[in-house]
Length: 396
Ligand SMILES: CCCCC/C=C/CC(=O)SCCNC(=O)CCNC(=O)[C@H](O)C(C)(C)COP(=O)(O)OP(=O)(O)OC[C@H]1O[C@@H](n2cnc3c(N)ncnc32)[C@H](O)[C@@H]1OP(=O)(O)O
Image (cartoon, rainbow, N blue to C red):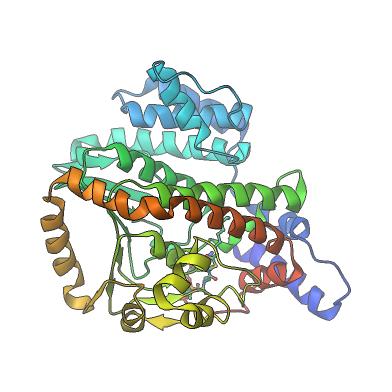
């Protein structure tokens, strides 16, 4: 966000304070903010399509599917064609890749397509400098680094400059990475963050990009996306481990209740400031947190936004084990490498036996949380809180 748009949002917020009767809505916010956001033009998009044809190196099926999906989303919108039969493998893979983009707006898909092509052309220019083993790194993610090694697929949130806040694009990238990891040959999957934060939660600027259908459409699309996103954690078939390298906020905390194991650095903190943001719990935390830590402790976190230290979170059962930050990475990865060598089918079956009794309930909780949030996102409390953040008046 530029200083200019920040000043405009601030002015908007100040005028709401000075004139409380004035209705400040997301479309008003959008007027100022999204006009300044970077957008790929039709010309950029066409140039990118031409560049794809000139690529010297085959980018691989995964990237080609992503390009296909983004192209379809950018030109036709959400996938609405019938799902191909199970034996129509190629078309089914294409359909899956397009369908997973959900309601991603056409303009965002166009921008993502252009960005992806640009990353391919720059990586092919520097391919002679590729690190040994770099072929194990999955290409095509803009805000994630996904690697597979020693039987472990590591999905690292890679937006340290924004404290790993999850943008709309990142929600889709994480879903894609989880779906891919669920089918790859790794035995366990790890989610972690790059930099000093594990994750600062939902990117609060996600709500400044209002589609033509207005704030109702934005809330509806966001609820659908959130439901799919959390659904990927509920359904993930292999052991899923969080390596919480630093503070976690919002959805970075709530989804931890859906992991099998959570290791934390003693620098990590756990904060769900839903009250301050006019929001309500998501990530199935309205069910998992009371179950994990008891209703009273869960209420203190989810209603009043009490921030927990790593040791407190461990004492309350949300975290499996805490390590001093100085030895965190070494200890955790040594342990994970040992776990990854255990018989994969036994691990998978054990996870499923544990999860299956709860799956239906978790999906129902997820649906209900998303329904409630859809209302919350249109509330004055939530809109004012988001504007407060954008105007930099509120720091947690
Ligand atoms: C869309 C559908 C799904 C919705 C799912 C809903 C989920 C609910 C939630 O996740 S609620 C939680 C939302 N998160 C927050 O409220 C955190 C907001 N951030 C902060 O309070 C602070 O930034 C901080 C405490 C995380 C870190 O503070 P610090 O002073 O150390 O650093 P900065 O504030 O300077 O941050 C560095 C830059 O990162 C940007 N940033 C950080 N977090 C977010 C965020 N959540 N959304 C957007 N941007 C974020 C911050 O703006 C700085 O950017 P700048 O340098 O360009 O100013």
